[in-house]
Amino acid sequence: MENQIILRTKGLTKKYGNITAVEKININVKRGRIYGLLGRNGAGKTTIMKMILGLIAVSSGDVEVFGEKLPGNENQIYKRIGSIIETPSFYSYLTGTENLEIFARLRGTIKKDAVKSALEVTGLPYKDKKPFSSYSLGMKQRLGIANAILNDPGLLILDEPTNGLDPVGIVEIRKFLQNLCREQGKTIIISSHILSEIALLADDIGIIHGGHLVKEISMRELEEKNKKYIEIKVDSVPKAAQLLENLLNCKNYAVTDKNCVEIYEDTLDPVSVANCLVTHGVGLSSLHFKHETLEDYFTALTGGARFE
Image 1 (cartoon, rainbow, N blue to C red):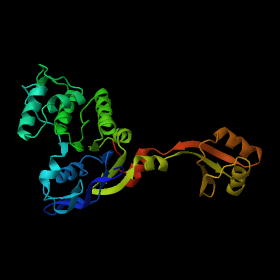
Image 2: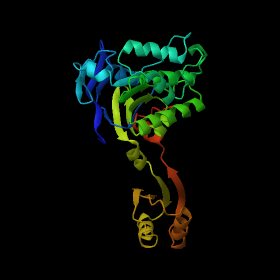
Image 3: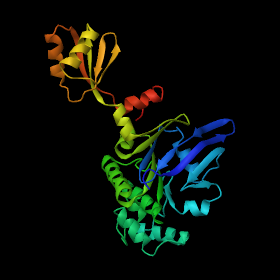
């Protein structure tokens, strides 16, 4: 069911004595989408994921997954979730296949071809001879994800899955996760402190800062908020506005200062704007083509704290 909420937290809070790690977190993760938890290191992203997975106790608040509340329905819920929290750990002297076979036996209810299928999905060889210790960092991350999808979960929770990878490895993991979501219908929650990665990968984001959720928004909405525009500074805003409307047929603009106008009409050529204004006697002191970046938006929300 499109846009169905598959995971929801209400007032989720974690305290360690007098220290509040995260406070009153309300996130809403939709089925079949990639949700990015974005924030600087130490913002509380991993703490939120650990509470959802029952790895640490919840101080207060509620977690609802697949329409069921936690705690109380762990057996039904957790077998439908795959996860990587922090660095995946495997036996270094065993191959990827051997490692996954051990995890498959421990879980007990895995399908017969689950190991082979998980390796194929992640692009890793089945029954190879290379031990885990010889894997590249990208292969290790892929094996961690293969382990997370062994039980064919509907929901994946991945904590910094591209951490430490080189640019090529990051691109590979990004494409792989997008394929899991688009082609296999998985819902994915991914945390990161790297703004550019979340911007390329996520459908929706929750911005975490200082243990608080400061914004939850879809990437489509966010892109709408950060459109390109032309900024002009003139000696007569009323005359400039009249020319924009009557001669350039521009209705999508805003007066932002007594001498400044922002033009949001994306089909309008800056040269045409300048020629029109100057030709009709408007003093034009400056014209700039601007584009507020996603980082500008995040920086404003977090009080000047810039992301990597």
